[in-house]
Image (cartoon, one colour):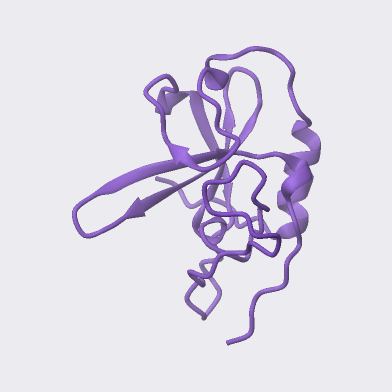
Length: 135
């Protein structure tokens, strides 16, 4: 896979603003993806085009595994903030549906015995510029 350009907060927001919120029905909307979910079978991998990454390869610090939920949301919540400096966003790629232009974040969740492709639709209203926690 080619190296994707790093998207800082401003670049990420610019992509979200440019994409808007398409109202057309599409194959990519068959499964609700407002919160993190496993990549559904109804969404072929080839329908998504990676346009950039929120993972900063040049940062000397390992990306945090801390999540950002100041209002008591959870990882799975559809209204959880999209905070690019926090997990799992700091390890995600920004992808665009080739058919309708909707934006999605994707990353690979890995555990002891499994690998799962996770996906979440980008909703501009949930993107926040939360400063990184200081260790």
